Image 1 (cartoon, one colour):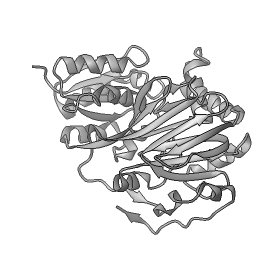
Image 2: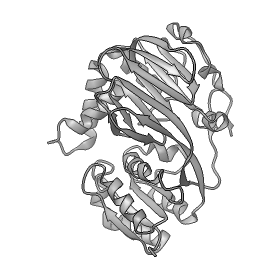
Image 3: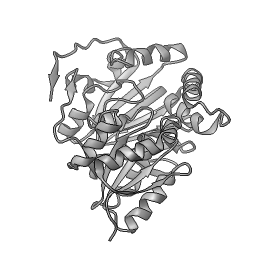
Image 4: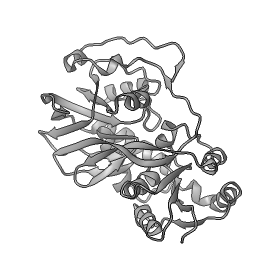
Length: 339
């Protein structure tokens, strides 16, 4: 019988910084969780192969040592094995999934949570486009999807990941064309969106440093659904202005931004394909139709036993009519309130 846990390490996490301090990180990991077996990824999505191999060998606890992409690729395998538990060590560039579950961006503190070993079941988003995959925090498409795809395909010669990513993100946020789409939520009538700029479907609140859906994690847990964000009619530098506001959640209520809730969302393009990503992994670049669905109790995750989730706005901003998003609205922040 294999000895738990099995740690899968992405040395390219945090633009390659993890690989440079790997020996020190492994020593600290042993100090917190004792002896463990591990493997190091050698290329994109190699985590999936390594995770499946570890499960086949009998491991019941797998630890993702990296960022959102590392954890998501391992999660894609683990969802098919309900007796396997996933732990997250914060070592990536952003670690949005980790933030959703109050896992600190600190190697020592995230290892302490792993050592405690408390776990719960959480939902996932089944994403169907060119391929079928899962998101465990947030999936998006449009100009943000194009930017994520460009980071995979372009400027492979550049070794400084942060400069490359920021340059390509700015380039595609500005240049990506809007797309006419139909958006169907659950069994409601399709909504016609003449100029879709971007969309977000999420279990969490944040993506790459932007406070996109404030309080959404709490609302998802309460309603057993997903938060949905639609950005429409935004072009060029108006997108930059919106993103600046979104850093602190101040984009709520501005013209061209609409939010809703549901368990299943279908987005069908009437123009070109929508580029879509989940935690940095691209799952659609060619299909005109993307289907997203909440799957309850999809993955067993190690999390802090005591944690709090701050709610900055009440849930009302998710229940407007689409027509209301063509004008500016105002939302009041709540007093400091925690679930």
